[in-house]
Image (cartoon, rainbow, N blue to C red; front, side, top):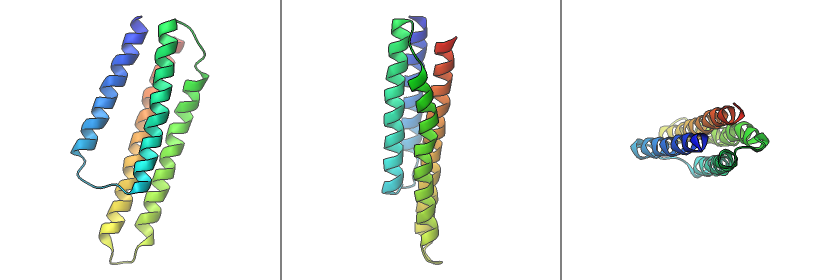
Length: 128
């Protein structure tokens, strides 16, 4: 029960922090980045629910959690690559489009790596 509460608290605090950062982020994100971020958060939510289920039962296989740890940064990299394609495909005078592409790449990378780090900690907590 204690592990379940630790995982639930870490998930809530993490999602609140991501929501706060997203609200404070004044830049806009291209649709490709939004899709990548939503996909990463979907994988994170599924994996976090699985971790909570394992903690509630007291035992279980963490291989799905390990898969999510590996997949989150890879999905985020799709957003990163699309952001940099947007940034470098514009003309030399289109600075706003370049900034939009760079911010798209950085935002999706941040979310993917942050989700992966939290899931890694949860997997470690479940194994110990």
